[in-house]
Length: 149
Image (cartoon, rainbow, N blue to C red; front, side, top):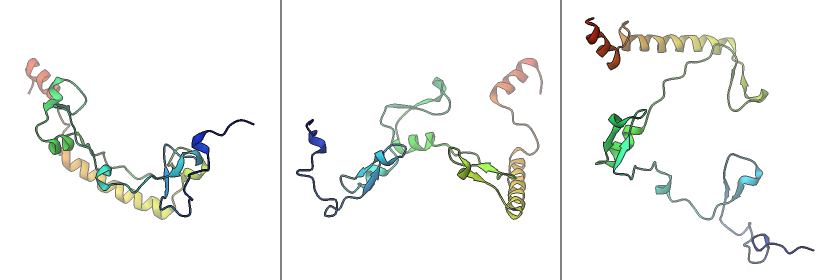
């Protein structure tokens, strides 16, 4: 019979009923990724980390998006990006990673409410642009070079 590895040995292992440790999940899921937590978590370890380097980047790249890290909190805020609001679906939609249990089929009342909410978002977006297309720096430079106003 093969020897039992030390980490699987029952000797010296505290009883799960007498320990104050709770289950802790690691990884993406599955029973093999659940174990006992070694101790209670320190709340400071769960906070958003600050940037430790001397220089940090924002945006999509390029040297124009690099700046000195003189204030760690300001650097963290500069890298946080808010996503655009999600429009409500007017028909069936999928959530999660797939499978029939992840299909949401809205009722007629849900569809009516989604249409009302979407009209609010569309009017809010129209307010921001005032009906004019936004011009970026490259478009403005091109217009200047070509003599357009």
